[in-house]
Image 1 (cartoon, chains in turn purple, yellow):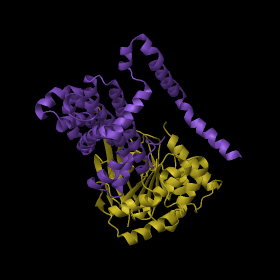
Image 2 (cartoon, rainbow over the protein chains, first blue to last red):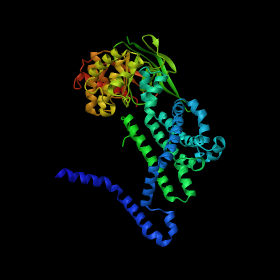
Image 3 (cartoon, rainbow over the protein chains, first blue to last red):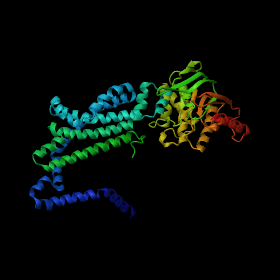
Image 4 (cartoon, chains in turn brown, orange):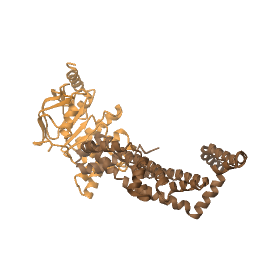
Length: 265
Length: 249
């Protein structure tokens, strides 16, 4: 029968990109099992094997520990993201009105090169440890990529689209809402994606030092207990979640803006 | 109604402190329902003239008026058709045409009727729900024409509308435009650098000189439409316009 064969072949082709990864994981397992114990039993603690990680992850999922920390991190990311969305109207204003750009640009140019992490000491003094401080740091990581991409998106709007709309009777408000915003949207979405990514990185850093929960807290806490398995499971959870957020936003954007060339492919 | 008057219109640009005269003392009229082509080399200020009628730019001297009223800012009584179509890529054909009607606050039922009529007029029945991206260049320009006509402008402005098309498509779109214009007569101001396009389409051709743009001559085209390029009168006009354009270059 032909169909099963093709299906198997197709399945094989989809797996092919993971061949090297699988080899690496297998090698890691072998090293942990047979080589590290011979070298020095201490090493086994420093680098747990994939099978141990899998067991740990299973346990952490079963007890709800992983989900608890993940939920706290995601909640902080989400709240900061909602606040950072203010960069979209501000960016549209800056892209559209020269005077506003002239006044706001120097402010942002001074603040922008300060890494969000550099705000951690001050933010702890301002907000104490916990959610607000974390959200503040994440917000700082998100707001500039969103702002800069929005400004760029507005400035790139085809002049003739604006002229066409004006000649069809669009006033300032209709122009901004129905033409400028829509034309800039693909670039704004790119800003949102970059912002979410930066925010996720800032989140982990903020939680390392300024939180009592969350994935960043989890891996730092596990370090002090020498639980390298938990540290690595936490790291993987951070990576996989970041990837899922990005993929979800990409898919959402493609669904909502099917006409956009920038977001295709 | 749709009578355009140009009265001593000039445009002087400031090019880093140095004044550059793009248009000097342009005076002529386009009567209601006439098809006027502005012919000239690139840089003769013909697009500037069109942009001033549209309200995108303002004259530095003289005045442009439509039906006796001075032109100030863009408005749906003067809609523009661009070389690059300038369709909203996020909107379907129907939504593109609807835009101006919504700005004009035309009631929804009437809007649908007007859209259907114009989709039909430009020969795009069956494509109303497609996105510009899914259409060929010629079809996109048909959408732009429908969008511009749907708001019932008094003047239709066209800026090298078919320059981005290949020869065959350009010719068929020129014929289409003549067909549409004869079905729904309208004052048209068309800017072009193509002598053939001017003769094929216009009632008369305003030839502009270059830097500064001045009216060199106004040439009436008294040939029956559709026009035949092998007609001796056509060829004579072509020779005359070519002479005017290349004169003094």
